[in-house]
Length: 206
Ligand SMILES: C[S@@+](CC[C@H](N)C(=O)[O-])C[C@H]1O[C@@H](n2cnc3c(N)ncnc32)[C@H](O)[C@@H]1O
Image (cartoon, rainbow, N blue to C red; front, side, top):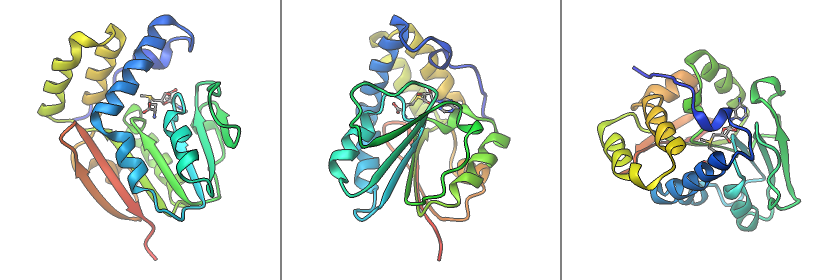
């Protein structure tokens, strides 16, 4: 069963030195897990709008703004707009659950974001996802191998990251759980990566 525990990073001030170290760790973890490479390669070439929920420091969207110049890009996060973000990226700061769902469709990305939420919250987010043509979701796989990889990485990361890695895996998903909790009516392809991710590529059925 999933176990949801407070992640330290989500409750520290944005400019806390430990939070800044932990966000740097997160960039390295994303790199080693290949998460952003998978997302960037799976976005349909002709997509007209890219939205990311829980965009963090906006690194993925900065990369995507260069790769998909034709697409409008929109981000949501509790964090303030990152200074380096290209001006073309629209940033909405605040709790996603207090915003109106976007109506523009296109591609939706959620990377290491959905494991923060309970099943009723996921059902609410799933209703928000229905308007999107393509969904790209990457979350921690709740399994033994990611736990082992986390233990191997532990000496090399900040204590905040060490804590958050463990609780993220415990709050992660096994095959079938996430699509069911979101109540997706898209055509769903799910995969598990060697690096500890569970991934959904979903397209709206005609
Ligand atoms: C683990 S970080 C992942 C960030 C980014 N996707 C990445 O992979 O680097 C989770 C992000 O979700 C954001 N977040 C958590 N709860 C949120 C909420 N209710 N509304 C909007 N953003 C939220 C946090 O601020 C944080 O930036």
